[in-house]
Structures are given as C-alpha cells and as structure tokens.
Length: 163
Image (cartoon, rainbow, N blue to C red; front, top):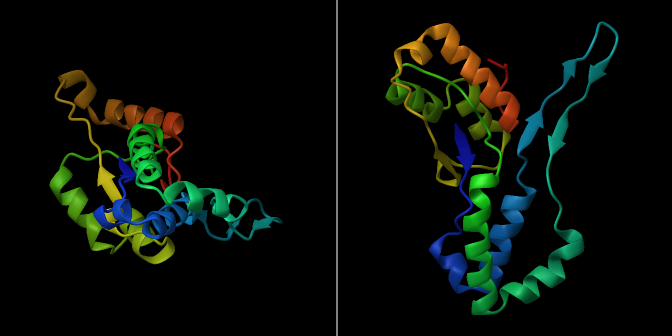
C-alpha cells in the first residue's frame, strides 16, 4: 500500500514559515480525487475531491510554528499520526519490484494519477507492504479477498477497483 509521508523535510524543521508552507501543502493536497463519471444512465458526477483548507487556522498555525518548540512538537505529532493516515492505494502483486517500478514510471493506473492529478511526488509517499508466505493465503483467490478487505477497511482513496 502506498501512504503519504508525513515527515517534514529537514529545512521545514528549521524555519517557521517553511514548516507552515509544508503543513499547508500536505493538508491542501487531495487524498482523493475522482474525475467526472456516470453514476447511472441519466446522472453524471462532475467529480469529487477530499481536501482540507487551512485558511481559518492559518494565523494560529503560523504563530505555533514560529518557535522551535512548536515545530518540534508538530514534527513529533505528525510522526505519531502517520500510521493512522489512510493509504492512497492498496493492491496485491506476486512481483513487488516490478509492480513498484510500474507505479513509479507513471505510465498507467495509480502512478499516472500521482503524477498527473495530485500535487504529489514519490518523495511524498512511502510503500508499506506485507509479505505473505503462507501457502493457503498465497492462493490467488485468497490474496484477492485479503486485498479487498484491506481496501474496504482502510478506505484507500486512489484505488480504482475493490479487490
């Protein structure tokens, strides 16, 4: 599964304004972006984005991040929050290296969405995976079932098909 990296870059930890801009970017970058598509034979959705807006909290956040103590606290908080953030994508593969290269090439699917639709780069993400070596769980139909359960329970916003 691909997840957002919530670790601020080194320079952001040194400057209140740099940390503020970084926080603003991670909050305002969509976690989900769905383009126009038909919902039924007579209804079409024009799209949907799930994104935050810091406008109402900008002054308070700027003030908090103006001190080294505030930036350190925010960094520690984000490190604790990161495991709880939903994944952007969940999938399964028998060849992790090949699948990762395919995503990072941006030629199709999830990789294309990252490069074309979101204000994200691969440095903004990390890959989290679970190696399943158990014979029963490794059967294709069982892997697809586990993939489906993971997608549904984690609400991975950029996965285009469940299971």
